[in-house]
Image 1 (cartoon, helix red, strand yellow):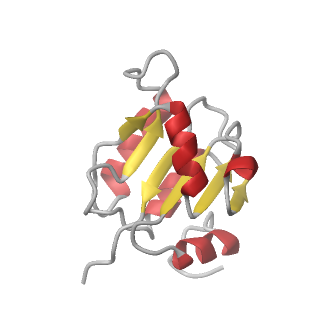
Image 2: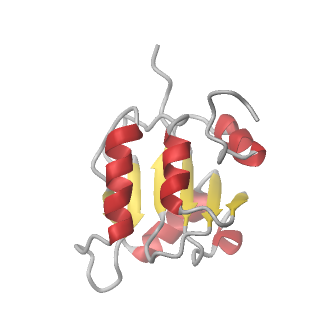
Length: 143
């Protein structure tokens, strides 16, 4: 344990977050997401919700302020304008915790998978709510 850090930030997750550079992506994925078949690196937080993981990650990770959409979720198949409850909860967390609060944008399912394949790390959670996936682009630490 370390002081001042959310205990959900496991050693493997902290290592991945620290190794990421500006512009690298992290996917916080639900339990249904094909993390191991899509990801270069996968860190697991089984039994942890995606919302709890998002809150913990945003306590230490800056969002990129140089791109229009540094936070993306997967759109609902067949109804891209629908906002699932988990995505509404993601937005509340981004508003409250992120250093650079933004409106979360949506990305079509297959486009989200493609971005996930290129992500630096996929954080596989135990989230069971459908569409509990969010992609974050790491920003810089401002003095």
